[in-house]
Image: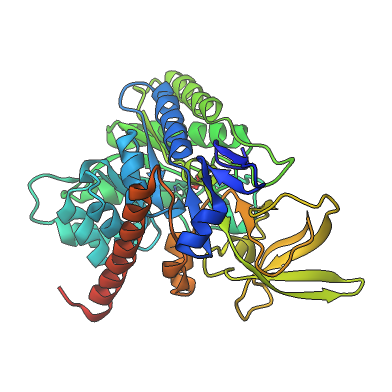
Length: 442
Ligand SMILES: Cc1ncc(COP(=O)(O)O)c(C=O)c1O
């Protein structure tokens, strides 16, 4: 699915999303503009929530909020039954200030600070996914006097190549994430976790990477984790309640690219878990899936305004727009490819190959390389599909401009204004958070 469900053209040839003209939205809010369709978000959230039930009692899906961290959107997704996964104190702050119940929040990441862990514990979140021994040391100090232990999972790295871009492969041998399963590190992690009286080790987590289309890799990871869980039961006499295979379900960003069937993916993981547990004679843990871009990506469209143009004979034609790597780092970071159409008109039909460049002073600031589009004039509105992954949380830190260029369209005008306020509040909250942690202000 390349565009939000309700995307079409009106009689003037303008792209409409959920019945609202992209041109009218661009006039009202300015560009660069990110438009999200609530119907698409809700439908995809529902599919993820329903598919996760394949894992049996207690199994669930949580939204990896790094994919799109906006208060109104987090509350829509939570309303549909998704938990929320965060990867920083800033994301935790935004989730809590969006009214998300702490009991459905989990905290991932490879270098959580003492302050971040303290805030997560104080908020009473559901699960902390521990990445390394350093975090266990921090947790030991933070939970020393606790009566009720803090629930944790250990993130494991199974060392599996998932054939995605190497910058988004996380379960491979050469990775900064998780306790390696191919040496003694993971067993040492379990032994250490069991020593810390203030935490309760509930099970294991892994995340193999993003844009995954290989279901066999997820199945192999589950088999390795169950085998490890059986060894740990043998060594320590403990059984585990939860296994999280992470997220990473691939989506389509351009014609010809497939989309992962989430029900098939989750169902396949659940079947593998059942078989592996039966083989190892382990009680079956529940599954916690962490989709991010699969939910948010196809719900969004980015609209820019075209400006200057450079035609280099025999080499390339660049059309520059008023956004770029500050609002979407993915093409520059890992060569993500998108599709686009003109949002303000249809034709003419004689398409020319152009490269949509961003406005930032980096040669790498290119949004889409070599895409056939109708001839573009200054003032045209190229609309790019499939927002997917890393907009607000990453872009904002590249340049603060992303704070100003993100707007949302949710059903009805009142909602759009509410979303606008939410985004300002989220940007403000993040700034407050950064200020507080930078200057140690309480
Ligand atoms: C730990 C973890 N879980 C889930 C996700 C979500 O991945 P995706 O958006 O590809 O589904 C990520 C993304 O990097 C992640 O790091």
